[in-house]
Structures are given as structure tokens and as C-alpha cells.
Length: 286
Image (cartoon, rainbow, N blue to C red):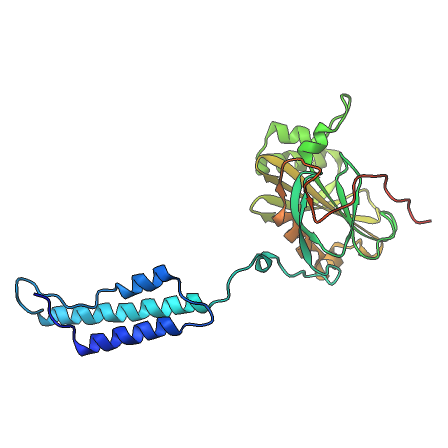
């Protein structure tokens, strides 16, 4: 025989359903509604006897737990829905108006790239180039970013050409091993460098060229799906100052780009949004 449910529990179940039915602006999914409705409110009998006081206490505890579950579900249900745009970070630099999710099968990568920067197609092995507003020339003034899938770049080389970074990757295709080989190469060449950031699948360096060089270089080495990717930033003129690049948010935005880069199959028809096809670089300003 099943005992009648106490009026208090009937009232609670009524209130619980009212909470679920009144949630707005997003309705609780039907599976969640059913699961909550099946929370055991009924007081059962054991061996034909009514529950002992401990049993009534347990029933109250279950009811309290159900209230907490409902409150938790209400928080989830009322939270704004996630949209693809929510995953795109807000730029730190005023030089970047916003990020665009760029698919570039021509060069074998996907990335978050600055929406207001000018894209150029220089062909392999150079890779894609994005120029910041106010760019006047690599040796004069401005900021440019290059993106390359090193596997595609190496495949485009002639029989008598080689790429040192690709050879080092082949020796050790792990991020730690690859970048250790690159650091050793820089040390042998007399270049100074600083590891600025370590990301889950990328490392970002600042690289000092010859003494007195009017250029500051940031470079990110990333590995995705077993393919090496390189993102480089070159700053010249008044922008050739690592402290200024950091203060202006350029380093943070470069890190956002490096953290988003992934490898995709080579496909010249898979370029979304559309970008320029490869061609000769523009003449340097006179």
C-alpha cells in the first residue's frame, strides 16, 4: 500500500513546477523538466509500517536537495546562450578593430585575424601577409604579420633549396623539441631572443636582429594536427619598440592570433572570407 503524499510535499511539487514553467526567456529543456519532476517526493512504506522519524527527516532532506537542483537549473537556463561570436576575443589594441575567423586553404591555416588590416597574397614559401593601418614599408613605418603553414612552404621549395626551421621540425616534431632546436640555431647565429609566452600549442618569442636594426620581430611557433605553423610580426619606425607594442596591446592581440591558429588541408577554393590571390608584392613607397 502506498501512503498519501503530505500536503507540504504536494505544495512543494506545485511550486517546483511553477518555477520551471515560469522560467524566461529560455525554457528548460524537456529532458531536464522530466528529470526534476521525477525527484522522489513520495514517502514510502517499509514492511507495512509508516516511516520512522528518521525516514521523515530523509524525505525532507531529499526535498531540500530538489530545491537546490531547481535553483541550479534556473541559473543555467537563464544564462545567455553561447554563440560563435562569444568565442572571439575583444582586441586589446586600438589598431585592431576586431577579429575575423579566417579560413585560408590557399596557405593551409585558419586563424583569428584583424578585420581592418590589409591582406596580401605573396605566394609560397612566403605565406599570407596582413598589413596594419598606417603601414608605409617594412623598413620605414608600420606593422605587418605573416602566416605560413611550414609544411606547405617547404613543399614549394626547389630541389636545391631548404628551410632550416622545417629541417629542425623533422628532427623533433614536438613543440618543445622543435623550439629548442630553433633556440640553439639562434644562439649559434648570434641572435638574442626572449620567450615571451607559452600557449597550449604555441610559443611566442621576441627576436633581436643585428645591433641597431630599426625592426622589432615577434614570432610564434605552433603545431596543430602534426603540422608546423609560423606567425611572424615585424614592426618598424615608431612601432619598433617592444615595450610600446606591449603597452598598446599589440603583443596581446598577436598572442590571440597565435593561440587561434590551426592547420587545414591545402585548398585554394576554401578561402572564407575571400582574400587576394598571390601576386607580386606592392612597390615600396618612394
